[in-house]
Length: 239
Image 1 (cartoon, rainbow, N blue to C red):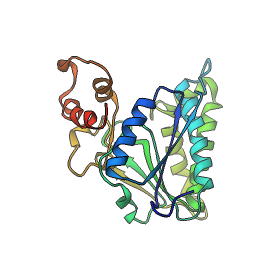
Image 2: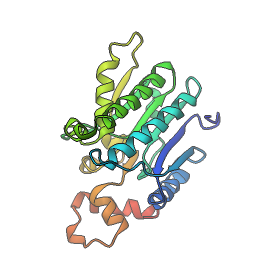
Image 3: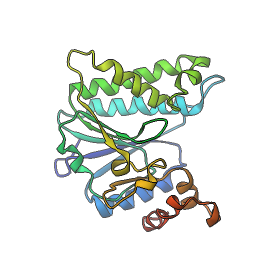
Image 4: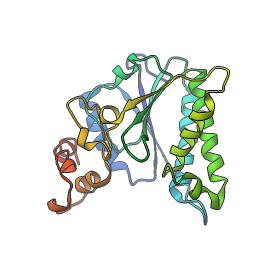
């Protein structure tokens, strides 16, 4: 349940122990920049792939079902941030809810124009249904077997493809959710948006070369300039 003193809860699902270090860094950022906000992290065993379906598709499918269960368990008007754990929270994110959306997702200027590592949910029947149908769309992709990789190739990941599919069909529902795009460079600054990082950025998503440089001793000349510029921020929170 959402604690009334915070009015926001972060919810993440991780696979095994491999993300504990990054979770700790995210915790450090929350303690400094959003003290008192709860971050629930559920650790599960990797679902594992199959002969035809890649592990990242089945794992993210398992994660989506847990996201759906969590959203469904929350009361009306609860505010939830569904998120990965390779994040640093640099500023309070609660102002995103100043807009009256049901669901907010982060968009970028890239071949796949959105990233599902951060989702903001205002819980109600519309958003509960959307997240549930998103998980069902993901399950249908898993059930495609050998056709799954071809089906998702325009979105790279199964969860992104399932989100796009659900977003397209939900407009036909009797009471569709109000879904708004918000910019990655502010709310989910991932590798396609690092060059747009600014003082307004609230969430840094540690991916790609930035993650490699933060976690490993990567020669400096191999690290792209836009990642090297963000590395001191990662170090500040424990990387």
